[in-house]
Length: 223
Image 1: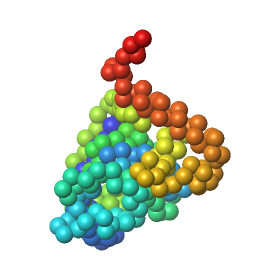
Image 2: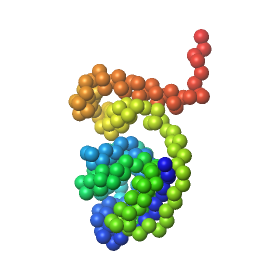
Image 3: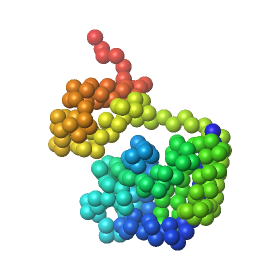
Image 4: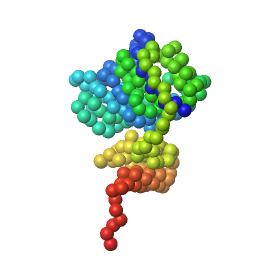
């Protein structure tokens, strides 16, 4: 496996196609890919966006084709957001045809004039991705390829796939907001699972996250 970092200067046609994304923002960085489904064309990312002057994050409901589910943190004109987007069918078909089931990693930054994409894949996948970029997206200005040392460790990596999906959905729908924006009954209905199953997954996920966060800090209670 190889880690590849592509730096790309978009063609004029690609810039025009993405023009709507940068109506209100200068750029955005993908901090975490929480879910990606090339079959359904769905992805959920944690991003940091850099807003243009005079734009308020409270006035935005979407960035291009990405729906803003929640604003996690704000620092001046930079905002960390949980977003949900949909890949175009043409893109899904291309990835499926070329078996580009990639592991996306930082850095990943997108602006009107520059795109940086990083992922882990096989040498064949790196070569095929380069072909697609040159044919459809833009000129590759720099490409770094090195042996992958994928040792990513974050809190969410401690969860099972199902626990992660349910907790992300719970956060996105406002289950953890104060006051709570959705009840466990409504959330379980949206996720098409029973309420007891939902609560069991959430309790186990919360326990795992707490154990990870407190590792090395918590001691046994004093008797």
